[in-house]
Length: 204
Image (cartoon, rainbow, N blue to C red):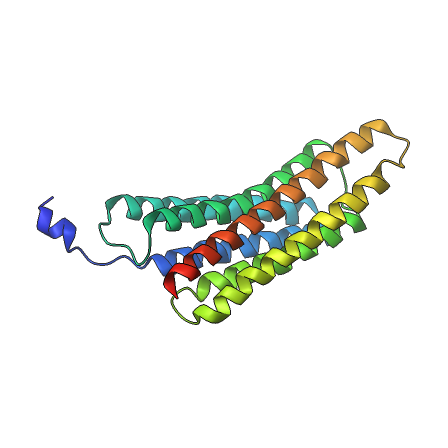
């Protein structure tokens, strides 16, 4: 490719790509919440379907990042934010897969945690959408998402303690893994909030 064409090629809308990826992540978490309410494995498979679509969107972003000279903000920040958003959905996806493998049904405790995860994922998506709009509001949304992560961790500890009151050791070990997946999902939300905050600080 001619060097000048590469340098001054049409600018890629990375804001839009990040918005599309974070929207898919939010939709995947919404599907996870629906599964936790219905226990219908078809609802669970919807999470798997959205996760594959989100992977394609992330790959599209990475491909554009690799061949684009000018980005709207630091390319490493774009990459890391995209990865954190991807990881949120990955843990939602593995939660479904593990529950299917272990033949586990949703519980009210799992549903409660996933609902909080949904609220915080929605805030991450809204914060991403504000990157090129209302930066002050976007920063607030990122910080609020991190507070929800603390709530997930509190629920995780409380429900883990309750789980160990069960007599079925196999059930305890299986459910502990599911709780751990959701805790890891919340950790990635916290990371996405940190990255967004870092980006907003540099923009303001």
